[in-house]
Length: 434
Ligand code: UDX
Picture 1 (spheres, rainbow, N blue to C red):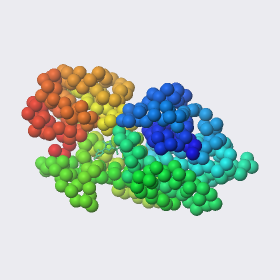
Picture 2: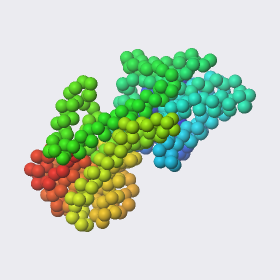
Picture 3: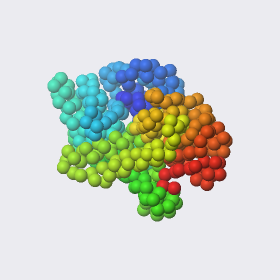
Picture 4: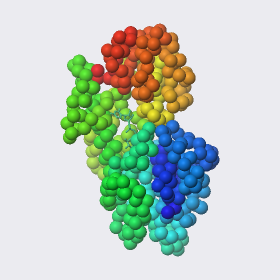
C-alpha cells in the first residue's frame, strides 16, 4: 500500500517512519526542500528518541522516501495522510487551517482513482466535512471520477516518547462518515492499522465529527488536570501543605489516577495551549461557554506568572541567573510556548544577566547567553532556576553546583529536587506548592 504523508514535523515524521516499519510504502512530503534533502540523507531534524534509527531503517529498507513534489506523490497513492501544522491563527485563538486546505486542494487536483485522505492534524470539529466538500467540488469541476473519502484519525503521541507512543498507541481513533465509498475507506484504514490491531491495540471506530472532538476533549482534559493540581499548589503554598503529597494520595484513587498531576510552572508545548484556546473559540462560535477549558488556560497563565514573580522578587538588582532547561519538557528540543523562554525574556527585561543551558534546545535568546553545559551556566550565578526536568538536572550534585555559584537561590519550577537535599547542599530553596 502506498501511503503519502504530508508534513514532516513531529507527527508526520514519526507517522511516516512508523508506517514504513510496518511495511507500508511511505513517501514523506514537505515544502521545505532543505529538510527533504536532510531526511533523504537519513539526518533526523528533531531531537526525538529512537526516531533517527527508525528513519535510517526505513530508508535502508526502501520503504521510506522523501520529496517536495506533492502532486507526483498523490497520483498513485492509496492513502494521503496530512500532518501539516495547524497553529493558532492571526486572531490569537482559532486554528489556522491554510496548510490543511493547501493539501486538500492538491489532493482534489491530482487524485486519479479511489483515495483515502486522512487528517491527522488537530482541526476544529467540522473541518473534515469542509475538506470533503472542497474535494468533491473540485473533482466534479474537472470532470474526474475519483472518489476521495476524508477520514479523521487524530494523533495522541507525546513528544519525547513519540516513537514508542506511535508503535504502541493506547488506542486508535478512526472517524469515517457514511457515504458511497465508506467501505473502501474502512478497508484501507484496516489494512494500514492491521499490524497494530494484530497486537491487540483497541480501535475506536466512530463518525468523523466525534473523532475530531476526541482530540480536543483529550487534550483539554489533560490540560485541566495539570491546571487543577497547579491551582492546588497555590493553596498548598499559602497553608504550608505539600502538593506532591496531595497529588500522590489523590492519584491513588483509581477514578483520578496518578498521571498528569505534577505541579510546576504550567503546561507549554505545541498542543495544549493551542488546542485549549481553539476549543474555547469553537465554543464561542457555537454560543457555548467552554468554561472549564477557559479556566484551565487562565490557571495556566496565572501559574506561570506566579512563579515568574516569585523568581523576580527573590533576586537582587542586576543578578546573574542560571536557567536550566529551555525546552517545554524533557527529551525534546521543542521550545514552542515554553515557559522557560518567557522567563528568560522577563529576567533580561528586568536587567538581570541570564546564562541558560538545555541539553537539546538551542533557541535564540535575545539578551541572554547560551552556555555549553549546566555547570558553566551555574558558575558565578546568584540564582539557579530549573525550568525543564531533564534527567541530568534532576541527578545534578547540588552541593557541587552550589560551590560554583555566587549566590544560594534555587527556584525549582518542576519540583525536581527534595527541598531537604537542596537545603543541605546550601541552597535557599523554593519549589512549587511545596
Ligand atoms: C500532548 C498530549 O499529551 C498528546 O497526547 C497530544 O498528542 C499532544 O499534546 P506533548 O505536548 O508532547 O503531548 O506533551 P505532554 O507530555 O502531554 O506535556 C505537556 C505539558 O504539560 C508540558 O509542558 C509538561 O511539562 C506539562 N505537564 C505534564 C505538567 O506540567 N504536569 C504534568 O503532570 C504533566
